[in-house]
Length: 274
Image (cartoon, helix red, strand yellow):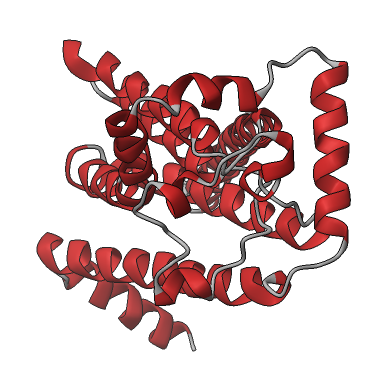
């Protein structure tokens, strides 16, 4: 058994840096791919329209009103006369969310690989916690409340994310939290932290634009974005604390191994002749 472990360790050591990088990349791509498949499979368990999704929406609106958040319908009404702006907002909602996150992950892998695992784990934690909330708290988005003044901009202006075959199968009652906002905040906060370019601050525009877009397209409430931001902060701190514990444990184990393998030298004793 010991020989097997040593041989396996030797094999890992003999691998070239390029080989190790490719294998590591493959593992991460497979992990994120499995996360994505699992998320969509489980997310659609509530896709048939639970009856309490509309009751939960009323509760969210009441909470927002109680804490003084502005009305989403009022902001949307200000934008609706601008056809091109609404059209661009719909396109941003559909076309930027996933590509921006993918490009960001590639950039981290290529330019800041030591940070990749931390960011990947935060992304997984944020996404999985959102999945739990989607199942436990199904929520009808604002665009389903036309009688309250909301307009489904995807339906009336296009493009409609729920008018295509993939969209028709999607869970439309998974409004809380907004992963559009959560992922955008992850991208911007990580880019600002990792990069040293003066242009890194422009990435802040991404979550701001995303928040504006999800509200004026009536796909999310303010509270959806707030919960997403809170979850992101939680998982940033949790992953950071976990890595700090791992570092302490690694240093302790390394020190223990060093002490165990420290040779003991017996110094010759002086003979005492009587």
